[in-house]
Image 1: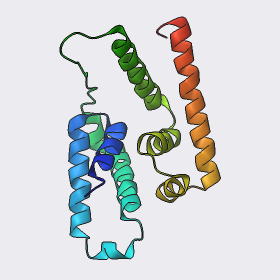
Image 2 (image 1 turned 180 degrees about the vertical axis):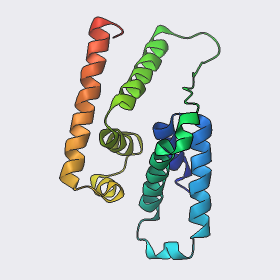
Image 3 (image 1 turned 135 degrees about the vertical axis):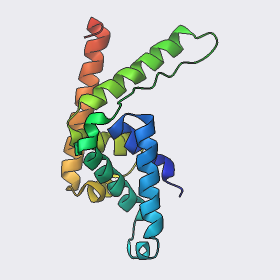
Image 4 (image 1 turned 120 degrees about the vertical axis):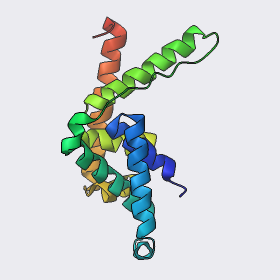
Length: 159
């Protein structure tokens, strides 16, 4: 599947845990494989798979098992010497990820699909069953929140 990595990144964004995201991706791919004959009726299999992944992850988080999930943030540590700019860039990326986790679910999804996965507005509105205008509004609000919190962090330090 050419979009397997996109499914994984979406699952990772929602579930946080690498192991849970891998399990979710595998589960979705198995479901897609078992339905491959009926998949011919879908005009956009990738959008369908992304929607399945989103729903599967949200169900997983709501389930009784969710209380038992280990939500482990990965620490990406580079070996060798690091330049100050690399450290600052990594810190900013980490802050953006933290801020994204605090966004309302819809804004988080829209931001992930548009800015990370690079889907267009029509594809996102189809995946999330939203009007294109609502997608644009949610994206605008999400970006504004991320921008404001990053500026606040850089101006005032950790907070």
